Structures are given as structure tokens and as C-alpha cells.
Image (cartoon, rainbow, N blue to C red):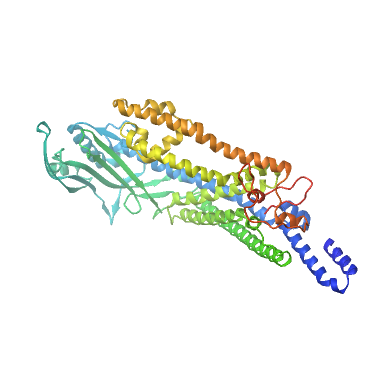
Length: 566
């Protein structure tokens, strides 16, 4: 209405030659009103045009639904993970002789005598033969075409060898040979008697012994959560693949036993269950379908907003070029490219993929729990991060967003420089301290240890655990750790915090005294003077940061009702 009144007043006050000018004014006012509306918050848009904020409502609904979906899937996934872990512990106690209940580093049991090796080896075979009488869980032998799948035992050794430690002489053919045999659990005693020559081990040639067998099991605990149980077929394809390894590669007098389990679930072929499990599964599938529908709606609305923003930018750029012979600066162009919309679209896509995988898992068509967890977890993370956009409409909460945006470029450059020093310490610590300190045995462990030191964790433990048998290495370790702590905690970390603090102080100062004006701000304030400026020419001489970077999400003073929010 205000625009029409302004149009009628102008048409009465000008002559025939002023019609073109009046049309230009009308076009400018329409563009200005569209720009102001684009940068309004949802509440301001509702007050301006009484248009319901559908996009905000969809985002709120999506947050509630995706979070609920994640919780439901997480509870189900915990049952699957606990079933696998408890089965692994049960198998270790069933098949490993003298297992203490706790693994030693990365292996389960260590053997130091030949008799202990024979006892442990025959113990596995005996326990396997009477598994169904020993196990308290629903575990049985795997079958194929009505026949039991046998246990397979293989030994790997050097092709030929002769070792005389007393004479410091050896003669070894490094080529490996592998001999395998199968074992039927129904006739354990007879099988061992017929194949005793297989167990005549020459330990100086022996590399390892592997025992492989296949089992079947059913995860019945999901019935309590009103879901159909998973059947675990212990075969290579859809199975729990259990492998026990007697490792003698080092030939150091210490043989390590590893028990590895790879558990994959499949749909049960013949099942019958009474109660609400099947009904509950149908409800979950309907809920997941509704989540997909909401995410599709959210993605369409955000895509539509991006398209409208691009068209509005084209109108604004064309108007400036035609009326002021002025090119819109890059900073003002970035105002129209809303990164939050891109974040929402990516989160919607991941939520849709995760929901489809979840539906397939519930229908027992897939077993990719880990892949589904990654998609659902990442989408939920992005959805909750997107809430910051709506908090940014309030000036006090907007400080966090502006500080992160201002400090991010300098922080990235600083981390690249500090990362070079960090990598240097990582490689140095691994090659020098790796043989003497468990926290430096691998590159990833060294990086994790140094990151813990930067945060002040396990400092005394890192110093104390170093073996002091080598005086030179012990002295080097002290210089190494002291220099790293002094450099990264007292200098690098302090400078890192200073960068963020400096950006925060700059933002607070601009919020108090006003942000530098851009061409877009001047246009919205109906100012006609657009000084010629080059991108990046305005620079804060104290901080070295360009004003345009700070103007992207600027807040106007309290007496100004024009706020750029996209």
C-alpha cells in the first residue's frame, strides 16, 4: 500500500517526461522491498506479509523426528553390538585354555612352553567336540546341505630349516609351506589318534597355526524390544567367522594366541513369534517413511530458496550495473549464497539414505548397521548444527557465529603451519621412542599421545612409562617431551586462543560502534552515494582483516531496522 501511495504521488507531481523516471523509482523500490524481505527473520516475514514460516516449521519437525529415529536405531544397534561382544567373550572362555578374562594387549593368551602349546591346541579341539553341551547360549554347528561343516586346522612353517643357537648357525629356506586338515566334531578321539603325526611340531620352523570353524546362533534379546530376532550364520558370507591363531612369527619363545570373530547377521529362514514384534516393525517402517517425506520437503524448500536467492542476486547486480555503472562486490554476492541451506540439503540427503538403510535392516534385507549409523549420526549432527542459524537472529547469540566466521580463515592458516611442526614431532617420536614406549609404537598412537599432551592429559604417565634401559634414548625422550610441551602448550596453543579472542574483540567492537557499510547496506538504507571500491581494499590496519569479511553477517545499530539475515 505504501508503494502504491508513493507511486500515485509521484505520477501527479511529474510531467510527461518524468514517467520513465517514475518507473525507475518504482522498480528500485520493489527491488529494495524484496531484498529487505529476503534478509528478514521468519518472525519478521510473518509480521510483514502474514506468511506462515513453513520452512522453519518443517525444520523443527525434522529435528524432532530425526532425533527420535536416531535414538530408536541406537538402542537397537546397542543390542547388536553387545551380542557380538558377549559372544566373543564367551568363545574366548570356551576355547582358550587358562584364559584370564582379560586380553593381554592385542592378543588373548601367551604360551611359553611346548607342552602349553599342545595342551591349548588339543583343548580347542576337545571343547569344539562338546560345544553344544557346554555353551549356555543358542549356538550350534553350521550346516550346509544337511551336513556339518568341519573344523579346519592349518599349520604354516618354513619349507626347510636347521637352527643351532649354540654354534650361532642357521640354515633356513624362507619359502612357506601350509598344511591343512579337517576335523569332524562327532569323532574327536579317533581323529586325533589317526592324525598324531600332524601335531609333531618343529617349533623352530613353525610360523603359525590357524583353527577355523563355523557356528550358528540367534540373537533372541531383540524380542524384548518388540523386534524380530536376527539369525547369525557362522559362515564366510553371512556368518560369524571364528578363527583362532597360534602366532609364532617372532620365534622369541613367546607364542601368542589370537581369537578373531567377524559377526554378520541374516534373516531367519523359518521363524514363528507371537506378540507385538511384527506389529512394532510395521510401525517403525511407517515412521521411517514419514521421516523421508519430511526430509524431501525440507530439501525442496531449501533448494527453492537457493534458486530465489540466485535470481534476486541477478536482479540486484543488473540494477546496479544499469543505474550506477557499479559492479556488486564479492562480499555482497556472498550474502545471497546461504551456506546454511547447503548444510540442510546435505543433512537431508544423508538422513534419507540412512532412513532407507534402516528400513532395509528392519526388513532383514541388509545388515549394514555401521554404515547406517554413520549416515544417521552425521545427518543428526548437521541438523542440530543448523539450529545455530535460528539462534543467529538474536544479537547476543549471533556473536558465536560471527566470531567463528571471522576467525576461521586465520585459524586454518595457523593450523597448517603448526601441523608441520606437529608432524615432525610425530615422525621423530615414532622412530626414536617407538621401541621403548607403548604410546609411541605406531604413527597413529604417537599422534594421539601428543594430542593428549597438548590438552594436559597423561603427562606424568608418558614420562614414567619410558623404559630407562638405554640412557641415550632416555635423555632424548626428556628433551623431546619437554620441548614439545613447552612449544605447543605455552606458545602454539596460546597463539591459537589469541586468534579467536582477537576475532571476538573485533566483533564486539563492531557491534558496539557499528559495522563497516557495504553497497548492499547503503542500498537498503536508500543511500545514493556508492563510492568506487575494489574488493579487499578496505583493510583494518591493526588486525590485518578486511572489513568485507566482517560485513557478511553484520548487525545494524539499535536504531537501524535493516538487518542482513539470509
